[in-house]
Image 1 (tube, rainbow, N blue to C red):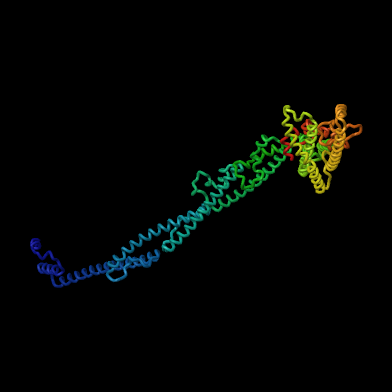
Image 2: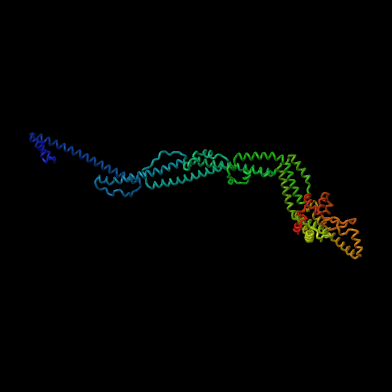
Length: 580
């Protein structure tokens, strides 16, 4: 049978009919009854039916699963499209025809692409949101908001752009905050340098990240850091204001004490770093250590030392200022009583009832007043000196004219001749000098409502006296000319006898007087200066000093011994010519 089956070519094509035919043959050979045959065939049919049922059930189940998969794919596709916010996605199939597997095959590539797009979009959201969360934590001072969770229900580009816009705003705020922090730190650095404080210790007390070793991006930008920095800057600025005010007060005291005691420049330069800011504003003080505490303490110690030294040198300083005041009055030819003033100063200093600064301020006021008065007298005094010099030249010219050998070829004769020419020009201006001087003096007296005195003598009286003396001198000259004419009319022998037996009445006894001759009782003529004649009514010391003016050789000595010196030496022809 096995051979038969092997030889039978139809056995390769097994079907239900061939199997049933084969079964019939077996049954015929065996001799099965019809009942058994029907029974077996019915059993076979039932078994085949069961197999078909199972196959149908499996096919139906597979179809249901495919439909569910298709439905899930469609739902997922719609969800992804909604989450990504791209409703016009070009990869979605437009038709729903075809078998289930065909529909799944059409949806699968779109789902794969949308899943990739979603993953990429989630990464973008995560990156942006993580930066936002980190910056917010930095602004909040390190307070964590919990783990980052990306809301995948809305991954649209619009929402992503909103997050990016928010991130840009936060980045700008971070940059602004960082710049503000750096500005505060720079201000703290500058203030600490000026105040002599430890910068690192100051800023690290605000926040450790503000140390210079940390990078800029790692510095704290929290609200608390900014607030603390602002308070620190405000405190340092107030401290700077107070220290500068204190230093300026000390610098003012030092300057006053130095001026009070005439401290030399070498000692003053030791505190240039203190006095250089005496009038500076707060913003102008930028030098490192300019307002350090040790510098202020050093200035305080110096002020205390000078205060103690001031009391011991007060009398010396006061007398020095009094000497200055006396010199001003002497140059201005104003008479004062220095002995009484010095006694009053000594009594005030010894009593201690007057503040040294107050006393010196009063003396400074008197010095300023004296300088002002001297300045107002300067123009008149200059004209007085020119007038006196002209009188000296007039006296010298008279003596020169009486010299019989003035035209000789002796040494220096040509110099005297030039001087005589200048002297004649100057003498011709004396009258105008006096008139101008009288007008200026009267205008001054009317303006000041007081008399103008020259070394205790009224200047107008002096000028009036000089005018009278000059008139008397002119009268004397005319009288001498008449006598000379009468003598020339006498015989020649009598003229020789007259000239040989007595001195010429025109010859003055005293040489180099500024004004003309005047007859005195007993026949002794004298060329008295107007100052000398007026001084006869004054004290003896004034008369002695003014008598020196009668001699040009004593003019320099007078300028040293008496404050009424002439600024021009009569021995200098060029100086005299400048007076005209």
